[in-house]
Image: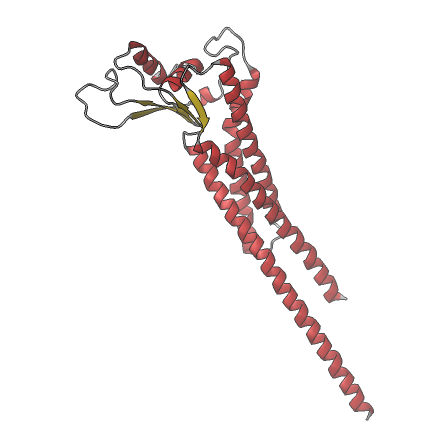
Length: 282
């Protein structure tokens, strides 16, 4: 009789233990699915923000000007175009051309649109029905060149605020893109190691990338506003931020959301894994 009682108690204990192990296994599977889902969503957000940031850097529509059609055969227009295409064009020179010819400006290039019926640029016998867009790239020297208090007047003194705003708006997007790429490498290594904990570093890098993107956008807005205070827009000319600028604006919150998901998944998974390990030891 005693042996039977001991055997029954052992069976019950074994049954409870197996149920407990099964429940913890089920809980572990649910947690793994939850963290994996957060990790995948963060990766998708990171990929989208990287594409948006790369497209923003590579396109020329951070700011766009809208101006009326210029007169044909104008010597002034011809002179402005010649100065715009010159390698020695200063800030005032190329901005005058941007104001007059529906200009667009990016981080690397400045472009103007020449109407097809402007005969000094295109001979009268030319029959194309579309406008011609001509772009000039900013050289590295131009990117790091000082801005002057009075644009175009080299004797007016250096405007340090606009100088450093211009340099930051040019450098910060590349820093942001580099941080996201480095974070992607760390995330890939985490996948190979089958551990979410290294993705904390990925989350921190995405947070820094988002701050860089936000800083770049802020510097660009401040730089444009200060430029327009120095060089007022001509009559009937308007300006607005373009879709390249909007891509950078959208990229920043995507980077912040990806950062939050990476850090949450890594930190919470590590914490719950430690608790489960302590329970198993106990």
